[in-house]
Length: 94
Length: 212
Image (cartoon, rainbow over all chains, first blue to last red; front, side, top):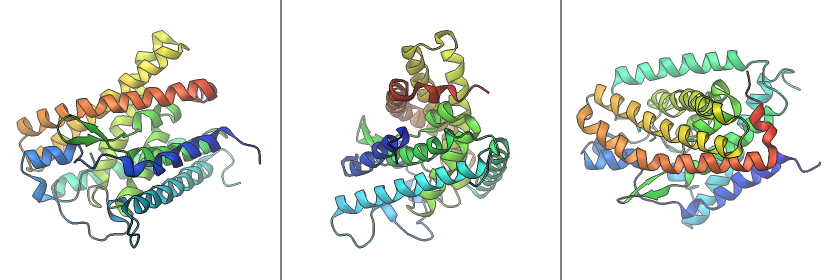
């Protein structure tokens, strides 16, 4: 299989996932406003948890757990985006 | 800007689900049988890239962080309806699997981070880029500016939803949300411009897909 442009793009996305432990852990814009303006406590706990906080459960090393969550999520989303586009393409499922 | 459950009231939740479901259904209809060969891998890598980039919170002033939304980028490269589909895939996965953004709030989050920024970003980009046709710098600047606006307007939408829900008064929510997202939007603008530069340098033809 020849190297195509989108192979490079997917590798770039996976590299970003590998860098994810470097992300700032400060609250995001909405969380910051919710804390400052006193409504953060109105947030409900999730109804169920699968991979909460982008940490694969059972992996003790937090950086590794984050990277794995990032890689898994990135690959799943590639598959979903590609698959959906294929379904919607002119030829349909091919 | 992923809204968790609890921040927004039942009517806002219901309105969000209705608008998101209707828009996504129309997006499927609008793009069905129109997706070109090149757009298939493009949609895949955009979903993957936006998910990964959204994990990378960057610091902004005062112990706050922000991350890319990516809707403007997706809409510039794929068109607004396909952009909405990409953002919907990312947001559903984040809510269902990663508990980022509430399950009930999913419709509102698709509205704020999918529908609004995809359409706004796409048409702003087209409008600003018009005089700079085919000029690299013009495309980058137009995309970056459009992307900045999408984050600010998404934060306005979020503030209005919080206010309608009775969570926080609009005169408090609006300046706070717009203030911090005007900064976060700079990151969005820079990343969008950088990706467009990369596309222009490697596969400029991908920017030509959106002419219809």
